[in-house]
Image 1 (cartoon, rainbow, N blue to C red):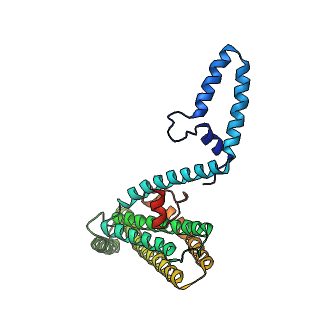
Image 2 (tube, rainbow, N blue to C red):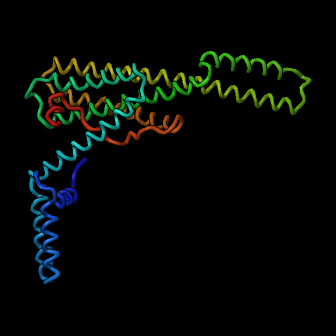
Image 3 (cartoon, rainbow, N blue to C red):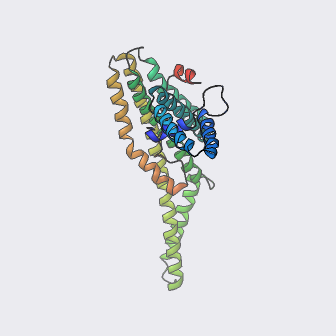
Length: 286
């Protein structure tokens, strides 16, 4: 998230050096507030000093870097809690699959030779890989939600067979000429409902097949990038490849959003996940 001048001003207002329990700015405001009761002129002096203090600190490059690093650390911590809570919703096998995928994405950054990639390039690759892992997790959760709906009855295949059997019996009855008009309408309505249920089950199976194919496709693409990171001396090309993959998944994220409306509320994919970082970078930030 890009910070603006107002964000730095708010942080400067509450800035507290290490070892101080109260921000010095608060102390100054309190002091001039009390002096202003004796002489209102101190309020004007305090206001001028406050504006100068906030402006000087908010535009200081070192302070801005400190604020940005603090915001990033808080954002990553919040996302880690959020992602872990989602991972716990998965079955044991899918949890392992996600963790392995995340590890493979991180290894892309670690396998590139030191110094071959600038901090900006590393951040760019990390952002792209972070989006891939987020989409991968959402695909796993979407597949699990659909599977839960399909398995709600005795079993998809067995239940579908019973539905086809009932449809066949209804169609046989509808062939009888002796049926009254009211009964024929009722049986026709039942037949139509059963056909729609059977059709929905077929759609669910198609969606599960699509999800499995997308999950495998993303995994294979990441493996290809890993091989390129080992053999190629072109970090820029790897960054472009990651961006291309993330772009091609735009349709997939839209599809997941549509399934959200059908199978229940899920996490919003519009939120931007934190970038993937190397293991050493994660240790340094802790």
